[in-house]
Image (tube, rainbow, N blue to C red):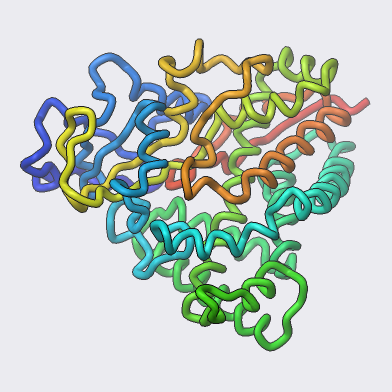
Length: 407
C-alpha cells in the first residue's frame, strides 16, 4: 500500500461540519482476499455521508454515490481539472494537457489524440493485440502456470501502446517502474524522482521525433498545431509524459482485476465459453464492477452542492468504483452479471475528459477474454497465493499467480 498521510487538525476547515467528517485514506484501503472494490464499497455503509470530508492527504472531499460522481465529472464549470490528485502538492507543477486543462483550452489539445484512437485506427491495433495475446499465452501454456501481471497484463496492452508511440521494448520495465511510482508512490522522494525521470524521457522522445519523425503518435503530435501554431517542445513534453503514464498503467491494472475475478468464478468462465457472443457485454460488466481510477477535481468557487458547503480551492475525489457499485444505480451491484443491460458508469470518467482511449481499452479486454478462454478455459489462483493489491491514484493487482491443468 502507498504510505499513509496522517490526519491533522488543521486539515478540517471551518466550513466543514463535524457530521460530514469521515476518516478515509485513499492510498491505504484495507483489502481482504484481493477484492479492492468490495473494500471501497464500505463507504456506502450506513452512517457514511454521501459526500464527506476526510482529513487525510491534506484534507479533501470524497463523493461516494454514482449520481454525484457522474455529475461532478461532467460539470467543468464548477469543478476544475487543474488539480486532479491529493495531496495538492502531488499535482504536476504545470498543466498536463489535456487532462489538467478546462474547456475551451482542453478541447484544442484533446482533439489531437482523436485520429490515433478512432475506430479506424483501433481496428489494426486490435489485430496486433490478438496476435500478441496468442503468442503470450502459447509461450507459457505448457508450464501450467504463470504470473498473470508480469507475463500477460504488462505485455498485452502495454506492448500495443509502445508500438503506438514507437518506443523500444527494452525500455518497458524501466517505464513501467516510473509509471508505477507516479500513481502509487511509497514516498514523496520516489514520486518526485520518477516524475523527473519520466518527464526527461518524454522530452527526449520529442527531440528525437522532431529530428527524425515517423508515423507513430509522438511524431504525429510533433507536427500538430494548436490555434494555428505548432506545439512547442515545452507544451508537448507534458502531453507525452501523460500519455506514457496513462498508457502504461490503466488497462493492465483493469485486466488484472478481471483475471482475478474469472479465476475465482468457474460459472462465469463457462458462460463466456458457451456463449462467446456475450463477451462484449461481459467487458462492460467487468469495467463496471472493477474500475481502477480515483480521480479528483478542484472546486472553482464558493458553492453549495446538495446542501454541502464547498469553498474555492477545495479538492474532491471521485473513486470510479463507487459509481459502479452504487446500489442506488444498480441492482445487487457486487454481483457480476453478463446479462445486465449495458450500464452507464464512470470507469472512463465522463464529460469533456472522458478517456479518449476507452475504445482501445475495451478492444484489448475483449481480445484477452476471447483468446485466453479458448486456450485456458479452466484456471485458478495458485493455491496458497494471495493476489497482491496496491491502492493509489490507480489501484492495481501487482501479483496474480495462476495455475491450470495442461491437456
